[in-house]
Length: 309
Ligand code: CP
Ligand code: NVA
Image 1 (tube, rainbow, N blue to C red):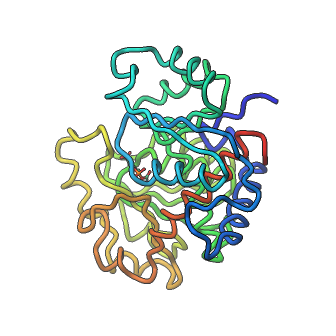
Image 2: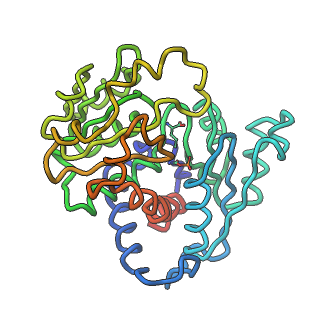
Image 3: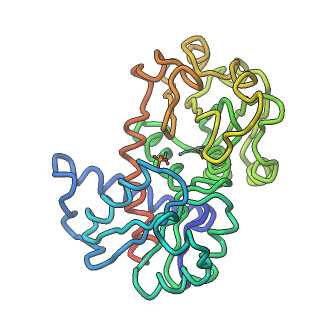
């Protein structure tokens, strides 16, 4: 079997992603009421170890992969750039080759997407994208699971995105291409997503609308999504916060979506900036289900990468 890396959603494709989503929901249901660290009944990754490399901060990705590996019967360890030899200039290629002799899979969160591609070229175990400046595919599998859990079907879904056209939105567009749902994107001029993702989604049959009018994007939406206005490593963008002000998801904007619409945010949130407290704390907000689903979704991603799904 070819090594199953998970650098972007297209590495799995729609059939494998559907299997991942079903497995995630089955495993979540089967664990209802269990202690969080207790292994699943089948413990399919007993004896397996995941190495996690963090070149940026993380709470959810770090904890959900660690707990996910424990629930699958395996374990995880963390390397960060300040205390590993990566921080002293050891190459990605050598790090990939060394870790491949020691662990069963590698998860990496980094800045430049080229680094994760380099890791995948040299690793002989699966490499998983835990976020780069370009994309955040694990987040979007958890988001899709959350949308499905809310009783919504993916084909034809109207998803509206507000604020910054960033890495998380790129993975939303990849999912739209694979599952044929529609994305309305409201951003200030100059903060649109990479046109490569927009073109790819459109060519795959998704309808993608780019607008600077947040009300138009929200009108009749099933799912309303935003993310931080300033992503990690992009703190020096002048005048960005002012440009983002009209794109805050507040009660007035949410009222334009369908009454049964749900609000998603990958977290961490800056309540009062990209989302008002009223929306964040409302019954329409499913952000903590989304965070929990990182565990369930990534367990199934790990099983797929290791050929057990
Ligand atoms: N959503 C997400 O990836 O969170 P962390 O940055 O805490 O991992
Ligand atoms: N767009 C955000 C996502 C954090 C999970 C960032 O890159 O910082």
